[in-house]
Image 1 (tube, rainbow, N blue to C red):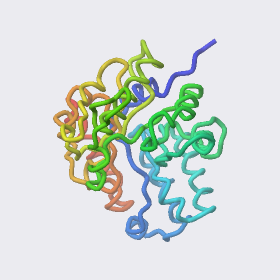
Image 2 (cartoon, rainbow, N blue to C red):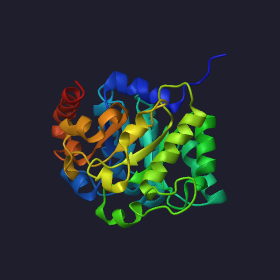
Image 3 (cartoon, rainbow, N blue to C red):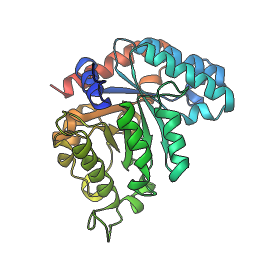
Length: 290
């Protein structure tokens, strides 16, 4: 009997084949207008499908931002299902950017919606908010392991407003003496060591902004490069200011585990500029990882 590959294994294969670029499918109002599409579920549907068509065979990972579909209500969710289905059919890994966080049965239902095979919104991985406590993620963590899915847990986000919370020092528990952000990253790495031992890469990753001050936030990215490696989903490149060519300088030993997310810098020139933008960003990252 063939054992299904974990998300971490599929992620490693994808980055080996296509590189580290992840395209955020974020149908902002201004992007829909620039693409000459209606600001509606119909426009978001067309936007997503055209992006996927252009990415097929050239990029391995997409990250649809659910909020830009959710704003259109039931129709938005219906077209999001189509976008997910088209991405899977194109061989893309789908990270649902949902940032869910809650407790008990509610979080279990979120995990069921986004991680369970056969569900309309099934993705390969989802983003999680653990700021109600890492241990609240027990159900999503269990489902990720059971269904060979991935989680990306918010550790250090790129918005400046987060610093006061993420730099706060823990005064008790197993991560006493660490910042909150550093404690979350350490817990994710610990989970990978305990549940994915012997594998090259774990399936539980962290969200770590490329523009954050890692020292201030108490995160040593080299600690995330201890086998099994902890994947890093890194927003902040391109439009938000981080340079693609600096990925190794920013993430050090963990650079090979980084998913470099970009959206507006790729999608901002409209459909007519999409192919050139994909090629340009792929080339920037090929040079950066030489």
